[in-house]
Amino acid sequence: MNFIRREELREKLNRGDKFKLVNALGDWAFEAKRIPGSINISNMQTLKKAMHEKMLNPDDEIIIHCSNPLCPASIIGYQILVHNGYKNVRRYAGGIQDWEEAGYPLEGNLVA
Image (cartoon, rainbow, N blue to C red):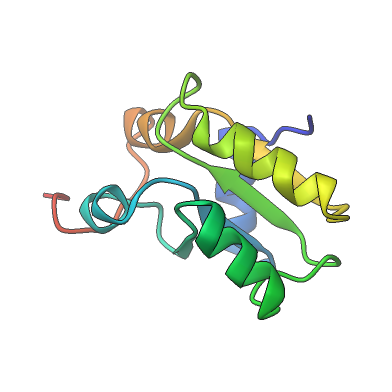
């Protein structure tokens, strides 16, 4: 599994690099709190739809995350993408918890 650290992800966002930042949490969690620029792909059905409709292309750089290092959603999403031929996938294991602890910006209904 390929990983990305919090600092590198923040630098990529600040530079405006072109990549897909995928939040693998459920809809309610995505609406509550997310890293700016994230798209929500919350289950197997929406992941397959995103692949089929080319919202995610095999050549895209994709960074997938969920809530924290123990959350399995981003692990499963990562494995599905790689299994389906996506070559440039990385996991931000720290997720929303790590991002928030660093004091980095978040958006959503529960962000103060």
